[in-house]
Length: 204
Ligand code: ZN
Image 1 (cartoon, rainbow, N blue to C red):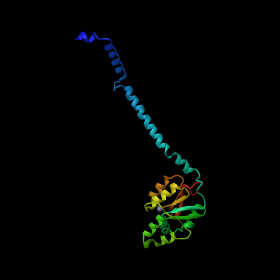
Image 2 (cartoon, rainbow, N blue to C red):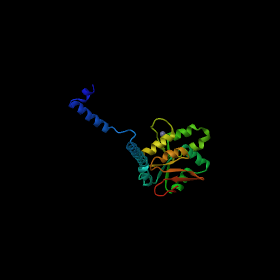
Image 3 (cartoon, rainbow, N blue to C red):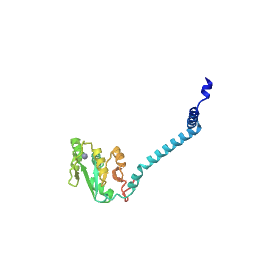
């Protein structure tokens, strides 16, 4: 039995060689080099991820700081419902207040959605509605689906960078800040304040 196995032909020898090769190719899973390689690979992936995460806001940051050429006097200021309401509460006259803030001519601008929101608020907000119907206000017609004003404003400033957004809503401001090149206006201690206006508005 043993003899027949050992006394093999060349084929058996070749098989042995192949087997040796196979063994050589295999590496002990517990080999420390494997662990080192895996760690290296994991670190590389983590580095790439970190680089990617860092890289995403980079073009935005440069846009935040660079001059937005489509933005300039007269400034079109997109107002939302609560900006008008808070202005009323703080006895701020919108157009005058905006001009005092930006030192330039301002055109308050209102979208159909915001107008609809004001109309829905009822008689308690009729003064706000009256302000919004001021002929100095520019009306922007809406052709999008849905009537959520916040989405409407975010969508508009994402598409066209020619607006300042005026809102007292912190969540909306947070959303707008993610869009590069869009200055924000809101009320701080009974005055309008602008944020992120290139060429020095009252930068915050
Ligand atoms: Zn709209």
